[in-house]
Image 1 (tube, rainbow, N blue to C red):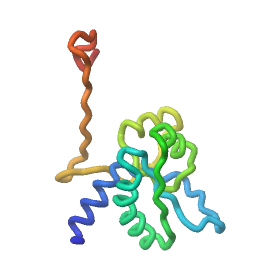
Image 2 (image 1 turned 60 degrees about the horizontal axis):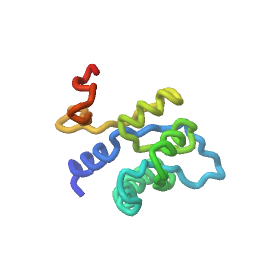
Image 3 (image 1 turned 120 degrees about the horizontal axis):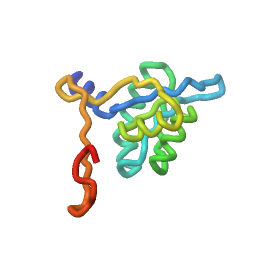
Length: 134
């Protein structure tokens, strides 16, 4: 894998990584890299395992990929410092900060050296909400 592709892969997958305060003890054999279930679990394992392996080699400790059952569970795990490393999108991060306070952000998605995020707000034609300020 080329260096550029590896960098794109690394930063693309890690839109937001949140490092919970390290709760590693001598008894703990591996760190957890957790993500929310935005794709099928098999696909997420396939996508995040290379990153977990890379991080494990760099830090000298195994990293295991875990996937939560839903977004709220993911927010709660990160907020309660139950994971070591987390991949989290911007909307869940805002919710997590509201509930639990800020966590350290290590990386974010960038395209052409610019941070990026796209969101869409959709309402029915007859909704009283017609502008962004509404």
